[in-house]
Image (cartoon, rainbow, N blue to C red):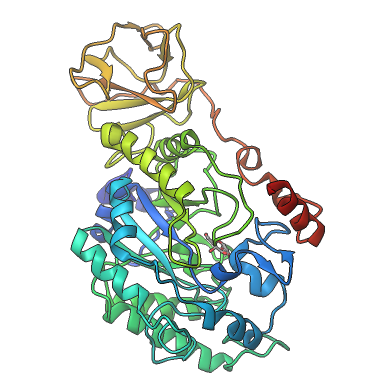
Length: 483
Ligand code: GLC
């Protein structure tokens, strides 16, 4: 709960007698401070599915076609656990994998935390575990504990490290109805317990426990959440520990609200929230997906997330050899360069002081400064309403000299206007710092609406409703087009 302080929160709760949405089991949420400051992290989807790259027996199952992405292959292509394991595990030998390279890239790109799939829905563990032999040490020729190498490297380079862990869905181990896994339900829950114990004791600090696709059984989820709290009280626990059907006040152990994949909420968030986003359609590596977002898309989305009070966890899907793709690297580095200059407008900021955005972009705030993220240039001037009083200083954040930009303020309607050059200094996102010499006061009567990313499908995965989902002809057509 970051917009209100705790005392005020309690007070509001007592006075209104409504249940204030809360995500943590305890009032002390100081373990979330670094997470709030961070604003930007790296998500890594990597596993056996990366070898297949969204393709099985000549058929394309990637690109979220039919609703599923490349890492869903086992389910989408209805592959039996044994067959999937036998086909892919012996091939898992990513000799190019270098933890130092990945972690350095995340750092260079301005990301403040890393979350990697330690076990996805296919049940394969990227870490050393005694709970199943379906893991990188026992089932693959690689025999290196990937989670350990990354955890150690993150500690060395001083960046927060966390794991994604699919606790509910496990197509390999867990039996569901008629579909037999290798374990009974009770045995499966023991495996999860053991895995959590291993992940939370053998790898140093685990800053994030990113659960995914929670089931409806709150008792099961609570037990897993309690175990995390017990072993690492400072771990930030993802709300996907619970099903979305579980009301927020019953999500006892969730520390942050994980929004549905790729979603920018339609307004500012008042609880700790995170959006995860792909750089193309798929999470896991896919051979033929070339729907890359541009460098501008990424910088823009990061700013809009921050303006709505949301962390961005941006995904990479390394290839079977262990390389983060060059298309990903280029985009991450470009965003990193932008952040090196404009980071003050993202890290440690809070959401926009006003509950709307503008045709030119959106705002973030830190203390007595407002940052205007100008995504669409307005050569006639950048204008905003909603803030009372004339700013004391206005300048381009990227301008080392901080030369003042001409500014006017009309108390009638509280309209501030900044004169700008005809050309945008940064076509992706020019940040204008607007400083005030007193705490920021918003105009309660201000009117405005949200203009950016108001419909989810418009900007992201239009392919989702492709009627040709999963069809062989389509894959052939994509391949032919490439030659
Ligand atoms: C979904 C998918 C999964 C992916 C995740 C990322 O829940 O099931 O494949 O890992 O989103 O947020």
